[in-house]
Image: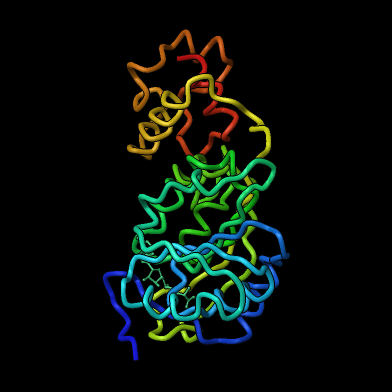
Length: 256
Ligand code: SAM
């Protein structure tokens, strides 16, 4: 019997209704290239393997990997990568004309860096379905002006269309986490709607703007943009970062 490890954020799904809803949201089909992050004891892994016939999984915990390996050929072809998903090169699994479909009940302690890591591979990803803390899903899905709108919303929405799907209560897991969870879908845009000419500029500008949320943008972005820049863009330098849309941030960074 595996003892859940706190350091790996292990909360195993046991609620069959929630498992069914997540699988319905993923809707795996035979021939698709599916990848699961953190398969754990296989709550999602085995039903999806059966439907898809083949599945890559990335799991850090050696003991869980050993258990998964013993099932590797029972229901289809399970390819187990014993690795830290934060350092995993998802591009190496990409094949021409077969974009990746990534899913998982993500370890909550690494969910934000995991999303940032995955955004680097958006060009080879068709979609992602993840369970995360509800609070993180609320931040990712928030529109400009909303209380939860911040750097994470802007950076994810730059690359992806976001759909918050449904909430999941702690008693669906063993052991139960302290927070509520939520399932969301991210669909990378085949063509990014507002393109930053220099992505690093855009990344740094958004980071800087939200590092001092209460300051006006004029103050927090001093040194990056002049008063003339604001005037010529016809944008309000007295605004706070949460008032700007992704398109606004792109406009500002393209002006830098
Ligand atoms: N998918 C299973 C389920 O729904 O019951 C387990 C989910 S559990 C919340 C998170 C899983 O991610 C665990 O199996 C854990 O060992 C694994 N994990 C934690 N950190 C990881 C990392 N950096 N890279 C890959 N897997 C990781």
